[in-house]
Length: 466
Image (cartoon, rainbow, N blue to C red):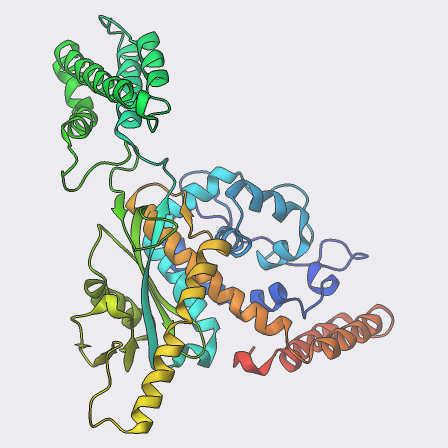
């Protein structure tokens, strides 16, 4: 059930609220005033029943926790703990007074992400682009792809076969089926025999152990198919079918299964010296060429060729900005694409024989700026939770990409506000007005002074109005 709005009045006459206590030059304070929270209220309130169920947490609270999680690069549990300790987090979430205690259970963030889905996270990304103002209006953008690794172990056949054995034994215990043999001790000894396989003397023994594990896994799958009832077998058929697909795949099999709990994971090679293969999904990133605003972040199913990712990425850009970009600069991985709709695609190539010196210089500058997308992708991975995706399924891949890009856009504006030359003057003005509020000014006049102060000292580079 949709929660009713909390009273926003001051709860204690002698103690001022967070709006009066906190510095209005703090980046999170400014960001809380810039984001249009009503967009999320209007979009997400439709997902709740107006009459049935227990009251839900406020929508602004849940959206702010998702933003703060990726902004600070912490887990669901950590962001809930930090919210309880941080007054700026609470004001950012819409609280008027400091509230002791956790805002919600960490698992509620999981349910909220599932509730709003990809469309809700796309709305957060769209709002992060709007917050960047005129900097996001640049017509020339840069495109690149990267790999979003999934939270799985490095896949080997032996690992997958051992997992199949454990899951088959678990199904038998759950359904009260007596197996001919559980193979618990046998599997343990075979895993020990598979160690140190890189040594020439152990290679033959390790390969024999791998073959034996595969045989045992197939034997248990067939035994379950024989002993499960018809109704129960229909329930477990998708799982058993996945097991049989893993057991049937060979070295040259296409569309392999690398993880039992994430079967959609792809093996992607990007030509990196330090990491030959990455297991996850491909991501397309669009960045404005000179200002560095992320205007597109799209997860791609499978392992498509880079040139084939550009069209759907530009569709997402058009959905965010309402228009097509003038040009896209990309690397040689996009060869074969020269123009998409009205957008011209610039790829590195030798200059034409009749090219002027000015044209050569502009092309050199354009591709020099293209390289700026590489460290941005590195920051997305290291600072905003794109390096390893802990959300489940393809839906989790799409959500993680958009929330990471939105957090980086918000952080870009936070850095601009923190480096503003008016920060010290804003702090001094805020301290004077607070002093006057305590002794001379009535409450309504203080509130107007606070609003005026925010309007005057918010950095002009943000191109924002309050």
